[in-house]
Every structure is written in structure tokens, then in C-alpha cells.
Length: 131
Image 1 (cartoon, helix red, strand yellow):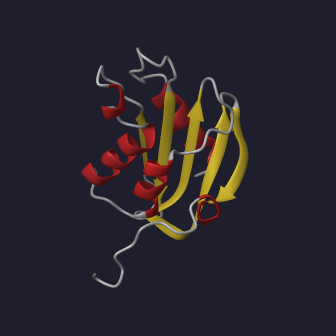
Image 2 (cartoon, rainbow, N blue to C red):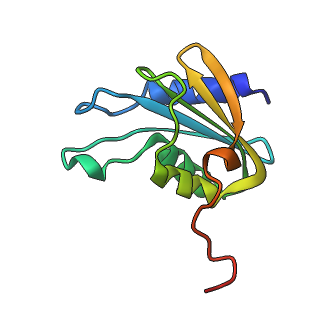
């Protein structure tokens, strides 16, 4: 499975975005270690901060399909090349990514840059010690 296929899934999800307020559609796709792809789009509502980011929706699909560890992420927005996940989504993703997960930064034509996820979110909240 190539980064191009992951981008295609994110791009197709972006086309389904429900963004009547911001008019800023976003799509995201996550790939598990096993190769399964789960995509999502942003979903807004009139109580503006209560919408869902594309990454959150993709993770919801991942969980509903049985879960897994995320090895690759692609995010695309019509109006912002190389869009980065917001801080909340970085934390959400951090709880599912593999140690060597990568983030593909895209524009509407494809992947522009690939970076280690750990470089964009090096120290997320963690309860590894059970406290």
C-alpha cells in the first residue's frame, strides 16, 4: 500500500466533508500495521467548536472496525497545502500510532512531504505507568 493510496482515501473523504460554516473541507486517512485504511472528513455543526475533525472521524472508523495500531496518516485540505492535525487530533492520533508512524502532508494533488509523527507531537499525554 503506497502513500498515494492513503492520500486518495483522504482526498475522497474530504469530498464528503460537512463544512457549511467554515467552508474548509478536510479529509484524513489512517493506515494500520495490517494495511487497513480508515478515512474520515470534518463534520461541523452550528455549535461551532463541537464539530469533529477529519482525523477524529477516521479514528472513529478505525475503532468501529476493530482497532489497530496506526503506521501512516495522510491529511488533506482544499485550501491549505501541508495542513497539520490540530493539537487535539495530534493527541488522539498519538494514542494509536506505532513508534515509527509517519504523517503525509498533502495538497489536493498528492503527498508533498512525509515526516515522522514523533517530530510533530513528541510528548503527548500518557498514562503508561497506570497513574
